[in-house]
Image (cartoon, rainbow, N blue to C red):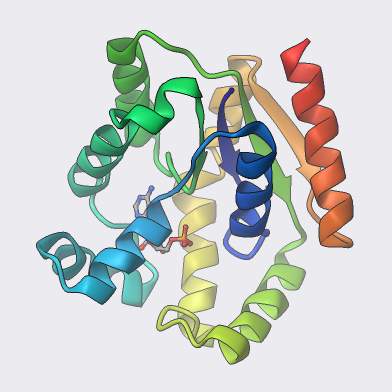
Length: 190
Ligand code: AMP
């Protein structure tokens, strides 16, 4: 299975990605997590990404694309993967197309987790109190939603035009959202 999990910040992508990955035995690749561990370790990649992340902007495509290309070339992606948080721009969509062509594989589906805008902001403010992520201040939370609307929301149209998109209701109990996702994936596999 080669899947993309899309959705606005706070939609629950991280939690659901981990669950799907475990169930299907594929790695969940979160570009946000890779950036955060590089920031924590103080690597050159982390230093390059940090100012963008802290202000809620996207890290430049050339940095992000190279990182994903390296990750997809790793052995554990041979059986498939779930991308969480990539692609986020139309240029990244094109770049991913090239990477997949080079690997001789194709996407099976793009799952879009849909959650109402005001609920997202409330969830993220709660998470900020619990986890203390530096990009979780209210101003940055609002900016991240704007950036998603400006640069990422339209990717759903692109994947829909390719008949790859499945929209999933991301509200309600996390377990119910997971069940909805599994139903969609089961349909993709038939
Ligand atoms: P996330 O944990 O997915 O919300 O990502 C946290 C932050 O990492 C984002 O706000 C961006 O600054 C950066 N980031 C993650 N994925 C990407 C991407 N595909 N393109 C550009 N920046 C990204």
